[in-house]
Image (cartoon, rainbow, N blue to C red; front, side, top):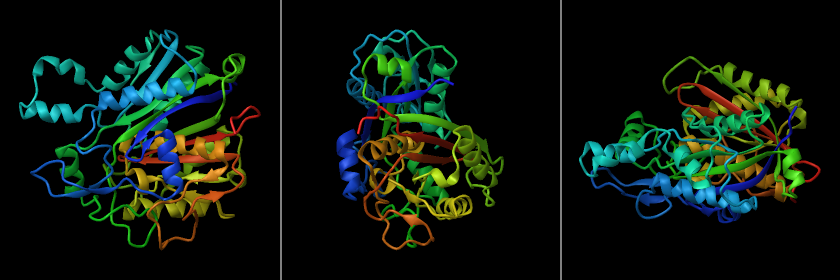
Length: 377
């Protein structure tokens, strides 16, 4: 089996770039503020990067450039696989086109795979270019597909992750109509949680075979052990109450990663701060990890970046492995569930971690990571 390691991280969120987002997360800071980006809609708590909605191409360019710089790689990189996903993609541009606010002559630059195409051009890649879209499970799926490109020998290096620019009138109105949006803030696993808060940003990773990474003397954040995906086949938005397919995904990931539940030191939960998700996720964790395991969600700081959330979660997991410290569950003050929730950042031994993403349509994604003998600590 090919060893897949992470040698670079590019991340941008309402909290800043990678180091800023990480440090501010450890302090329990939040990028969530009340914003009114569209006059026709009421003010809402949002985790925006600037005062106006961010551009997908701009976010992609920043994340990709930062990941390559972090990995000490310089374009052109013609043999690099590219897997950049997004659940909303260029929806902001599509909405502007329907309102005839932009020039339609460039509509081909707004196809759903735009972020992946832009990233390929940015690094000069002529290798496979993929653009997965699987709701909130997109980020983990993208990173898994990057792994597959290396495992199957199509390339030895890849850049993979997800980018999201979801602050659009339709997205806000749609989630609001569903009753899913919070009105004051994001409080994962808290008794007062009231809904999700949308956030902008994304994360991409430089993936390499362990052999290639060590041969070029690259620093290594950690190794990806395995992943798994299942589907509830239950409802358009509501997760299956029994959680059995999510449980199956976690079990499969552990089995494929040659891990047992007792070996897991930390779970980066999906933790959306919605009533249904947090309740089901807590029951799943209690069922599979009765011995207890440290849990947190960083969405109280970054907001819910939808398709990019799993990629951000994995980036935070890698930073936890690097720094041997767990990020807190920002926004949590009074837990509703009997879990070992990290209310404050926690210095501890971190060797093996899981990242969960549970997307609309019942798309369950889980990925396992660990330290390596040459990890960058």
